[in-house]
Length: 207
Image 1: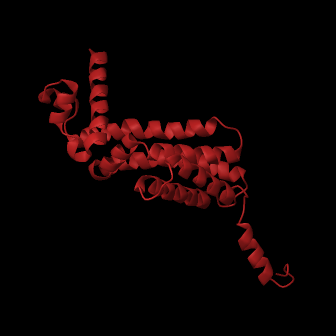
Image 2: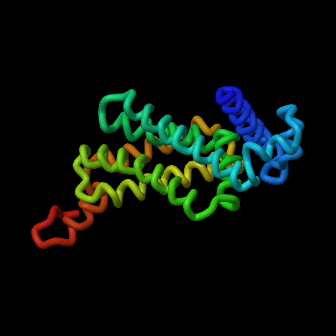
Image 3: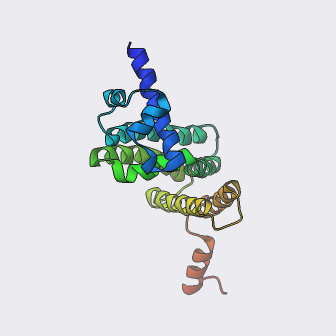
């Protein structure tokens, strides 16, 4: 009996993902879930008391899995440079996936503060992985650089999903990786900035 209920619950969550991809938040109704899964509408309420409860469980299931995928991609390679590249690529692969986009979009409006806090905690664990790698690269402020790297990923996602360019998400990912590695793998300030400061100091290298 417990296994049967678990299977039905999983089927409802999968149907919810499909409905979100097909029609957005407006498409996610208990009537649509009942039709999609072959259950009576009243039976859906036996598993989820409200749409908010359904979305909360959907996020509680999916967000940790996505974070685990990024972590696994980083664990699958050896060097710090490879780990940074894996982080950027996997984040972009997830962010441009339609199901990921749909769940993230509805989570903005449907989750309560406690559920959002759990998601932030999951993201925090992932950020710590990046901080550790940046520390290996010699950064004295790895948390700050991790935030900048996250900003690069967010910008790349915006470009990849905005429909404004001719490049594929894969090409944008490669460009983002190149920028990330050129910008963070040196373990210090950008060379151009260091050179400019040297020229301003007495005895610095002449221009």
